[in-house]
Amino acid sequence: MLPGTDIINLDSTSYGIAFNPNNNLIYAAVFNAISVINGTTNRVVSNIPVDSPLVMSVNPNTNLIYVINDNSDAVSVINGTTNRLMTNVSVGQTPWDISVNPNTNLIYVANSDSNTTSVIDGKTNKVIENITVGQIPLRLAVNPHTNLIYVANNKNDSVSVIDGKTHKVIENIEVGNGPNDLSIDPDDDNMIYVANYYGNSVSVIDGKINKAVKDIEVGSSPIDVSVNPNTNLIYISDERSSSTVSVIDGATKEVVNIIPVGDHPNDIVVDAKSDMIYVANEQSRSISVIDGITNQLIVPDLKVGFEPSELFISPDGKTVYVAGKENSAILSISAQSFSSSEPNVLGNSTSLY
Image (tube, rainbow, N blue to C red):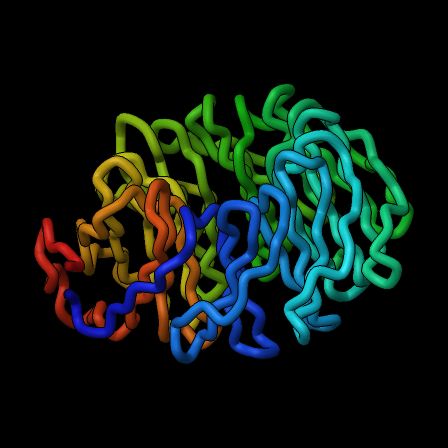
């Protein structure tokens, strides 16, 4: 096993990961439960019964964790101090994504089958609004600085912009074909980058005017997008035939690099503390690591033994967590294992264990 690697055994496959900075606890969505993991010992300390958990979002200001219940059209609210279920909040049909605005203590839920976004008041943990958006909203992102919420509508190729004060849609922005993910770069003049899965492009929305200002061609089937605020570079995982990561310069809005990674890259995360980029390659059952300064591969193809579907970096940047399909464990990897001073140090087909 690679030094600095630990295996966190769970009761079933993990469908999502979240971190609570208040108590160094990691929350893993498993079959009908949330496993609570001690971030120091990497051991499960509690299992909280929850129906069909999927995606989670933590409000660090209130120490509450919000969990999408895929099958029951609800959001579970967990107390981060007691690690007990507080309540279940009914939302729209097939909730798919969730995000917290810690400044307003409002929680937004994209409901893919009812074409709505539910707004939960964090003070009462009740729905105060169901906002009609576009067709099949799959992802949303909150800009806490402007109090605007951006919702990617996959079927009708648009992004709905919600005013967090009025809970009204103030704009529907036409983007590329099949918007699947989006990310906000508030440091780059408030730009929003939208990955269009079927259009093989990334649409750029200017958040000051809420208009699409450019459509950038990238690799095949862009599925995930992540911004490095330090370098103003945007990283896109191109899932299908290209199996690449496209790098966009936020200043010029042009692709400046195309990096080959493993087969079917999906989740991509940026660690702004170290300027390292981590990529989960589903079909090759591996992760790739990119130096965000040189945009060179540090680790081309590190085999993890399962199909990785989600990555998470601890807030201190010291640990990389890897969860995946059909694997009842999470891998915890020390970020020190990846040295940017020694490119390809782990070779082209290294295995963790």
